Image (cartoon, rainbow, N blue to C red):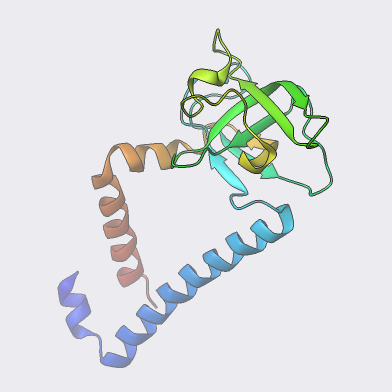
Length: 175
């Protein structure tokens, strides 16, 4: 691999680097475009646990939208993210309470496979989540496609092995 790299002149190396940067920039533009179209910061998420079985299994890839005017309703499967928590949660809305004085919605969620509601998952003393915690509503899914992400997070060496194989492939097939 390094012998092949040494045989390349600066122009060929620069071309390879620019190709890789173009691919990365294109992926970022597609992601940001999807975020704008779906009105959600994360239009695609991976199910990380079995708490939503049988509806969704660990590794399913979910597609989200969050229309501005669409209300959150009971039985909607939502993805929510609590402050100071890095990982979003995919659960179903089981109860909605609206405060008549403030007009604010209070939402209670639960995983389909869980025996109790999510109050134990919320922040200490928090009994409900709010509309601003909702990242999106599930609109579709691809089964098990997200297992690639889970494997790469659980076994970081797989990422580097995959990058190495892709690098070799690019060097071998560059013409």
